[in-house]
Length: 499
Image (cartoon, rainbow, N blue to C red; front, side):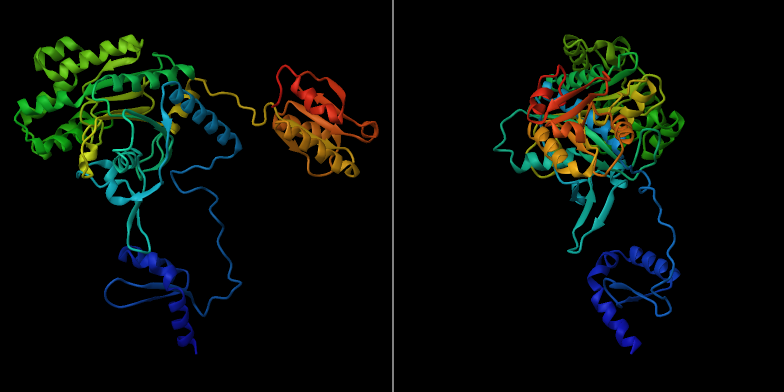
């Protein structure tokens, strides 16, 4: 009887086991884990494994469970109301800055086709994907960045979209990477992108928006700098050194690690890549240049890359951005699709990694089989900017229910009247919380302080008999008796209404 029962259970659980079956290594891990917990694992022979886990006969329904780990998965976060209030504030700042600069918001699925992110070998993002296979055998990944999704969307409606595009988004992104301060495996990112503009005015518009946000939240050029370069410098230099074109992307990935790894480590990696020792030495010394005169002496006055950088700084000066900008040729960004100007916001104290980064990527659509279209953009992470604002004492003090009203009744016989009062205020546009259980006035006012509401509306027996409710302003400490039907108008007449 027992073997027959096990076969039935295996067949019934076949669908639930398909996720394990899609990966032999995953199936093996699941089987090992199951056997340790006293479970029986059945798998088909040959081809793709079909695994199912069933309860062992010896396990009883009352078998004790271990304690649940109450922490979120490593590298991710819970957002309790106070953290959510901060996130909402930050996103609000980003959206207002984007709107002030003429950007429109869009979004895309957090789950995308894996091949959207599998690009040239050596890119860190390719190695950091959260990948999976669905029950139909499709290879999927949680998005590590938004730009490929945006490119897919633009390509899908390219002929119908009016150019230029100025789009913004705040996507949740996932990367399985080493965590540091302000760097998580899950984060939100403010993205601004401009499509259809081949000139440097697009980059300057992006830089202006980034600086506008920094100014808005109280940061100054003494707090944040923006490293500027162009991949053109590296391309010209490698060509003059006789480095093969096919080594360019891999070299960019290595150069991008200069702010994370010792220079000698990067030098060794360049030699392993195949660069001659003298070429690697010239490359690293040139990337250390930080002024235009020295750069001109190295690449020549007729260098296209040099002219591009000079023009960029001149345009940025018109937006009063000069104090924020730093010429730093070591900035190349690690993603292979960048083609020209690149930039990176950084904490001048040196305590945090990059605050934001981006650049020009004119050839991305071509990698998806489409016709290339000029484009530039940046991504601005939420975790690192919160860390920076915390360091500088610039985090806002947020009252979760500021400007709201708390309605309560002193006697349950007045519950209906209190509910009608709350409904009338809500209909008039107020944000209203309701005390849902019988509570004494002392608790009600203490709860109001905890919530941070501006007023308490108390429905009490004596006042209710006269058609009145008692309203107390917590800030002023004053109270008034107001007719029920006049209450919405009374609040509307306040200098600062809770509407």
